[in-house]
Image 1 (cartoon, protein in one colour):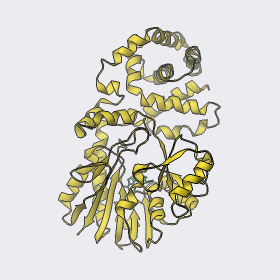
Image 2 (image 1 turned 90 degrees about the vertical axis):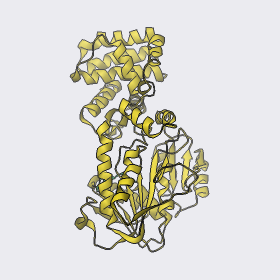
Image 3 (image 1 turned 90 degrees about the horizontal axis):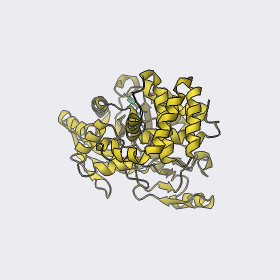
Image 4 (image 1 turned 180 degrees about the vertical axis):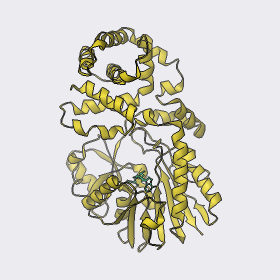
Length: 430
Ligand SMILES: C[S@@+](CC[C@H](N)C(=O)[O-])C[C@H]1O[C@@H](n2cnc3c(N)ncnc32)[C@H](O)[C@@H]1O
């Protein structure tokens, strides 16, 4: 099947059946134009609301639900015409052919007419976008635009704009194996331009994203791929030598490995996650980096299933969330997330925190973090928790980054050379 038909099928399947865009590409890695396939799929998600508006203007009547593959074929073509340097005649010819590959030859004249119509009237169609609400102009679902605007009245526009940019590639230096300067020299000697991150002492930004196999030292465990915002946990949780550490939602192990790289003399580290397949990745990462931790596969809330009653000095809870802070990396969130999701995440986050509190030593600390920018999943969870747990208090995070909230601190997503959106709150048990 030709690449444009494959892109249409991937996007239609994703919206019809759910999942994650990043997981859909494996069967297509051998394609000659694999890069273009990814570019089209990510691009359609990133620009979805304005593309959908344009298509609505161009169609005489809406497509039927069972023709969602045709819808995504057309959205992909409009994306290519607007954003890519592929010759326009090639985009139109190949898209018409792809309609045949989707076994919808009846639609070929319609596909051709829609795209030629867009080509001819493009300036006028584009100008109509400027008359649309911000959710269309800034390519976010209405509910999410409203939620971000309500939570961040000063920053909402720049947050939405940053969400639409391509994310930088950030690396984490394994400082047990070499300093950041030494590792940067290794990258530079191999011709990779890079710069040290300003927030986390282990972070290095590459000027241009690359496949990990092309990054010297990756296979040998000198570095990993991890956004700078998520590299702030070890400094905030600050375990001491000999401490018993629990990483409670650990898979695929980015933060577990970083904690171990940052504190070689930990007493013990247990990495817990309920997803067995994702937990295999923790082991893979530990092995590549030459680290070790105890692993357990269980639901955090089912304490008898995984806990031996020995309390922990430090707990990291990187809670499952809407991922609204990492939309630039996962723009499919804009197609797949629903307004009710933040509510159900917030309930689950509270229950995880509440269960874990039993496992923390008096005087011990728990770092709560999410890659969400919605207050409902962050400081509101903490407020409810503080009201329910009398022996809990927050420890103020004094940092030269982020926006201080009622409880905790929020990093907003930071553009082409900045961090993802992350929330941190440090709690201490009396
Ligand atoms: C944000 S991800 C963790 C990312 C990880 N900390 C890292 O840095 O690589 C959240 C994880 O929570 C796990 N999870 C969700 N609910 C859970 C539960 N009730 N018990 C245990 N793990 C859970 C998911 O399987 C997922 O791997």
